[in-house]
Image 1 (cartoon, rainbow, N blue to C red):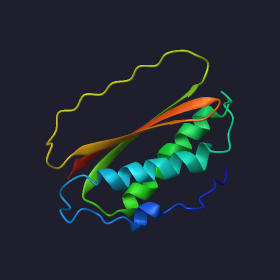
Image 2: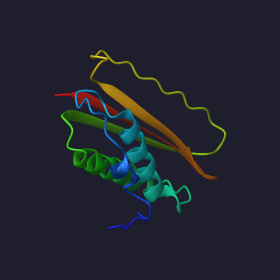
Image 3: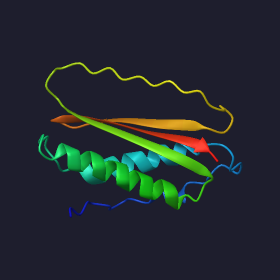
Image 4: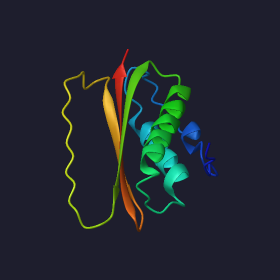
Amino acid sequence: EDEYDTAGADDWRRMELDEDESSFPQEAAAAIIKESVESVLSNASYNHVKVPQWTNDVIELTMKRLKELNQPFKYIVTCAIMQKNGAGLHMATSTFWDNSSDGSATLKWDSKTMYCMTTVFGLSI
């Protein structure tokens, strides 16, 4: 099992969560995604053999940290990693939900060799 650099991680723990627990904590979710992606990919160069493990690790780490928020949400986490080679990539999502409580956060991260698009959807319970 790979160990990832988590120095500086948990910054999201220090964020004040919205007093209204019924609304999706978008800022905290965005910070969690960023820390998860960076801890898994910051020292990596694109390797197609490792991509399935990296995507799984980003998703699992993000989900673990989201659960630690102890907020009344169901979460969906997606992650796509693509080699930087000049190819185009277009992604879109559509949701039908309660805008006052549900929400999402997306991070587009890149390095010299790859792109990573990670999204969290939070659905109020």
